[in-house]
Every structure is written in structure tokens, then in C-alpha cells.
Amino acid sequence: MKLPPLTTRDNAYRIPSEVTAVLAGLHLSDPDTSLLKALSESKWRRLLEFCHTAHLTLSLAQLSTNGFPDWVVDRLRANLVDNALRFENIKAIYREASTALNDAKVEHLVIKGFTQAPDYVADPCLRAQSDIDLFCLPEGNGNARAALVAIGYKSYEADMAIADHTASLVRLGHWKWKGNPFDPEMPLGIELHFCLWNERVSLIRIPEVELFWERRTTRVVDGLSFSCLSPVDHLGYLALHILRNIFLNDWIVHHVLELANFLDAHAEDDAFWQSWCEIHGPSLRSVEAIAFYYARAWFGCRLHRQAAQEIANLPVTQQSWLQRFSGSSLEVMFRQNKDSVWLHLSFVSSRRDRRKILARCLIPPRIASVGSSSVNVRNKRLVTSNDSNPLRRYVRYLISRSAAHGRASFTTLTKGLGWRISQHRLVIPPAK
Image 1 (cartoon, rainbow, N blue to C red):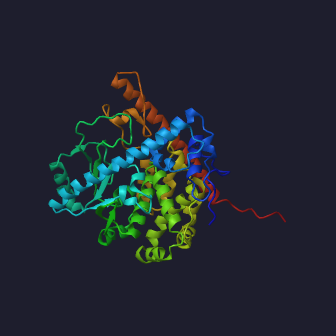
Image 2: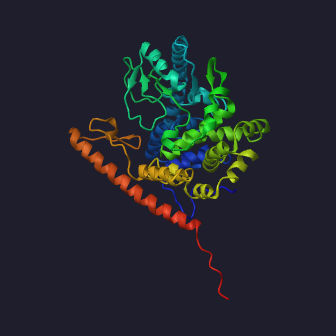
Image 3: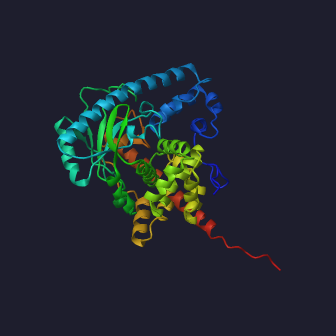
């Protein structure tokens, strides 16, 4: 199946030019840094701010910086140095946490984070990491939490309604934010995951995920030994995590880039893909193929013929959605859209569940309280205000949120209707 460019006749995605530039530079088959070199200072500043939030700063720093402004080069080099020092702290923090869990006789897996090295990112020092994600079997989660609390961690309360983990655990100490997202001394949170795929939230059952725990293995990265998913299941989990965040309209660009790196590096690895086909059944492989499509469409990675075949085997409805809407997950970083609901519905056959998904999309069930930090955040960006009155700020938040959701819901319905009509166009025979 031929994969189209992100901008087509049907959809011209509204993505800032500086973000288009960094995506072009990170393209695997045809990288082009000319757009980056042409950016103005103001656009560079916006791009660096975006890259921090999107976890692309260290990927940008690995490109050839010839032609970049000197101040940009200096900042990127400083980020690399700081993150290398930060990883040393990450290793120490994980060792301490792992010891506490082992003493409490709680088995765990490390997911995401430094487990992405070396297949998804060349070196763990080249990956931003703000927390350590651990998976424990549900019956061990409480003991794991108690063990970490015993060494000084405290819960950071947040809205956990759709999370795959319990409230994050943090040990702040005397550290204070100084504006450096790669600060080596910045505390690291720990998130205890109770599932690898949240059926309750997605309303999609993927029973094969329950076998991931049984196939766990032990690896060593930069002298750090840890238990983790097997190579095949690691790929599956990342693909499922991307799909999960597509459904939730969350940012996925750095996950897709890491997946693209893996797919490109293993495009000729027949042994791995034969193992993948033997271990993962057709239904799981078809779900993973959605993420493979994104990796190829966004970053131009090579695909092994088996991965490409799984994309070609996708149902016609899903292929049509990907061709028309795969760029929506880039646009959602700047403007709210809910195009993913149509993909989500394609996985669900129950009328009750389909109604639940559509209602949840069009009528968001969660509204932040007056004192919530969410009131001052829009799409992962802090909104500054000179108004010290919390009630007025909250009213503005409600108005802004309602307007954004209303516009997105209306657009979603109209675009979805247009897409469905395009799938069922009548072919009118020529007049005789």
C-alpha cells in the first residue's frame, strides 16, 4: 500500500513551519535540514520550546548543526551534557528503587525510558526521561507503593481516570525549578503501572498482552541491569502505547520517531520478524500495524516486508482513515481535533461501547476544579496571566475549554461525515 504525504488534497494539516522543518530534518530516508537553517531567531525560540515539550530536543541535537545559529548550537550542546549527567542520576535512582522493591519481594518490569536503548534510541543519554515507569502485577502494586513510600517518595495527586498507572510518586527534596528541562538534579518521578493495555479505557480487548509478563527477560544498558519486556513484546507495547495516545489525542511524535528508528534498523532482520509472526497473533499484529503506518508516513523509515504486509492487510476502513487523518496527531499538538474517534470506533463492534466512545469524545467527562494546575495549562503549554483572581482565571478556563471542545466536536462530526460519504460514493453508470 502506497503511503501518502501528510498534506493531501483532502487535508492540509496546520503545523507551524518550524515544526515542519524539524520533521524534515529528522526524516530517515531523505533528511533535509535546509528548512531549519532558514529559520528566524523567533522561530528557533518557538521550535526549541516545542521540542522540549515534544521530547525532540536531543534528537534535534544529533543532526548536523552546520548553519544553525551559534546560540542554538550552544544550547543543544549544553542540553546533551546535562542529560548525560542526568542519566547517571537516573541509574542511581533506579538502583535504589529496585533494591527497595526486591527487599519487599515485588517483581517488576521497567518499561519505556532507558529500555529504549539501543534499538529505539542509540544511547540512553540521548533520550529525555522525566520519570521511571515500572509495571507490577496488580496484586503487587500496593506493596510496591509502600516500599517506595518507605524510602521517602510521596504521591503527586492528579486526575488518574484514564491513566494506566497509580498516582505518580515523587521525592522533591530541596530542588527548585530553574528553567532547565535537562537539569541533572531534577527529581525523577516513579510511576507504577497496573496494566500494559487499559481495556477499561479503550473498550478494546487485546488478550495477548497478558502473555507479555511471562516472556519477560533481563537486559543490561550502560551497566544497569533490569527486568523488561522481551524484544518482540517491547515492540508490541510501544505500538500499543502509540495507539493508546492516538485515541486520547495525546502527543506521540517522539514515540513514533523511536519506533521509526527501530523499524528502519530492522528492515532486513528476517529472524526478528519471523519471531514476531510466531509470537504475536494476527489480531495483535494488525493493531501494531497502525503504529507502523505512522512511523513510515511521518519519518520515512524502511519497513520489513512482513511489517509492510501487515499494513496492507488492515481493514479498508482503517486504511482509508490512515490515508486521510494520520496527520491529525501532529496537528493536535497545536489545535484540538478529535479525528481519532473514527479510528477508535473501527475497533469496536458493540453498539453500547461505540455510543460510549462517541459520547466521551464529544462531551468530555472531566473538568478541572478551581484550584487545579490544569486551569493554567492549555495543550501542555503554561498560560500566563496577570490576573491574581483565581475565580476569574477559572471562568476564562471554562470558556476557553468549552469553545475549543465545541469547535473540535463540530469539525469532527463534519469531517467524519465527509469521510464516511467518500467511502460509500455511488458509481453512476454512463448514459447510453
